[in-house]
Amino acid sequence: AQSVTQLDSHVSVSEGTPVLLRCNYSSSYSPSLFWYVQHPNKGLQLLLKYTSAATLVKGINGFEAEFKKSETSFHLTKPSAHMSDAAEYFCVVSDRTGGYNKLIFGAGTRLAVHP
Amino acid sequence: DGGITQSPKYLFRKEGQNVTLSCEQNLNHDAMYWYRQDPGQGLRLIYYSQIVNDFQKGDIAEGYSVSREKKESFPLTVTSAQKNPTAFYLCASGGQGGETQYFGPGTRLLVL
Image (cartoon, rainbow over all chains, first blue to last red):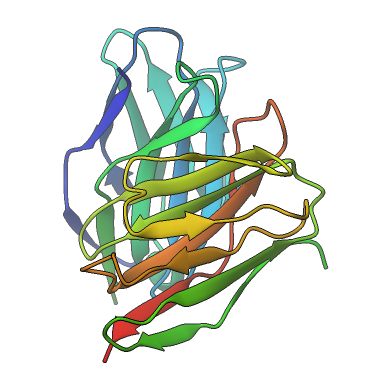
């Protein structure tokens, strides 16, 4: 069965410093992986998606993630944090074994950005 | 504008009352989904529909019901059988065969 583990429930950075949000996955086949962002009381917005075309995936707002099969990781990074990046981030894996497209969500990482 | 709309933004339910959450999409997507989000947790799938007039239970369907009479619409009813309905409810849609799901803005349900 597919699963994801977000290794940090909270991450705090200063504005202008790098961001690293960690995600490990478990999958019995080559997975499709996603990062979504959720601002308070809002829906989820797709940041980026990995589908085996390239291991380094670039997303919106300067975010990127690297798929590392040997480490079963899909960490999200950004070189320089902005105040508007403060939000909840979800790592997600797609599970196609049930005959439909099921998304398995991690518990989320709350990113705080300080001036 | 293409997208997914949910209404209302906030909904209050009295004990023993059924309430219905609306979800509409104009993305021409075949598949639609309902998720529940509780504080500090990821999303859990309530129901999904891959095509009009067909829908399936997700992981936490008890106390909920849905219909899919039109491609654009997938309303969710929270019945009185749902004993802990307070949560943030998110609707999503996706193209058939595609894996990416796009989310609406959500409805927050509170119990009076």
